[in-house]
Length: 410
Image (cartoon, rainbow, N blue to C red; front, side, top):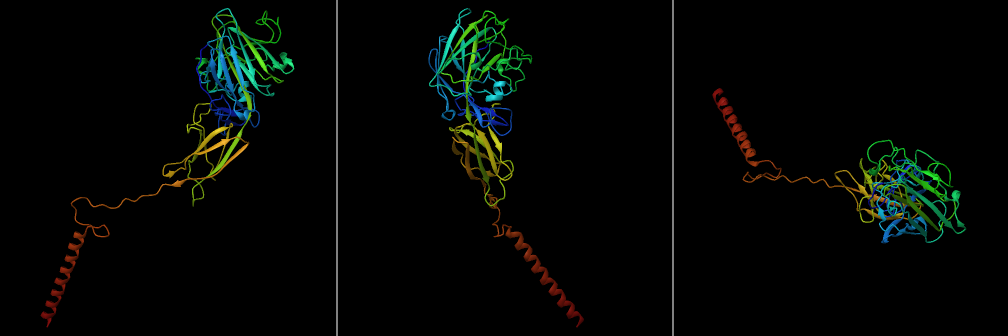
């Protein structure tokens, strides 16, 4: 078990890094994710969009999805009054997990962390949606080791059965550990590379160890504290609410709850030009900023940027939200002011952005203090005058000598 922290944002999409929700987890408002080269990710044209969680009271949370997700907002009520919002910085479902390959990495995306009520008593948490969810969203429970969580859900048609919950676990599936082969590796995973603990999915009771005696529809750990064990679900029918009962097996455990909705991605294009030149200078890039002008991070935590093509064109794939695009130019050139834009459709064309060459300033020639006055050409006049006088004197001497020779001959 491990306590965690709090914050938000970034993502990845099939064939491209995508940006996700600024203060909504991996989703549409911040950016997750990221730019044009990358890993596997969400379904084509979709990225994972996470809610921005706000703790409204002890054990009470409000989750707001970006408008682009077209997904009902959620509330969470739990009798664990110490439950909190975590940032996704130290614990997350990376791009190599099954979750990450469907919705993109949850790194820097917020989630809720909930504990049991002491060493023996279960906590109960209920997620309620403002309206029935569309199909295609997902939820995950993490750090399931010395504990188990029992899941029940209800839709417009009544309670969901095991199949309708859409569990993605095949029991003892080694990929159901978010520390395994992760890059970057969540800091809560600690040292070492052997993260083999995975939970069991128990759709019914009496299915053998560790399911014996556990309620149906439980994700069950193996009683030993470990790192990275998780399970995830994609319900196959609409859901209006679900309840998670979290029971300790040993120690004082807690678990992590992620919720995500698919959101259409936006492709941002444009052209950088240098007037009167066939192409912008080599090394020109574009950088994605949030609406406050702060750099948007990718899942590595690095600023999202992309090189400009030789013809000046650029392309970024982002989540919906409010952003600014900045040109980053080499020394000797001046970039235009960042261009604000709203990513709220499939394509956003920012048109032409012109950069300029910094003017070349030639400093005037200035004589050192105390030197003779400079001639208009900038040359020192005194040596020139002396040289001219010498030439004239030499000429007069030569003329005089010539006359004496002629007089002698006569």
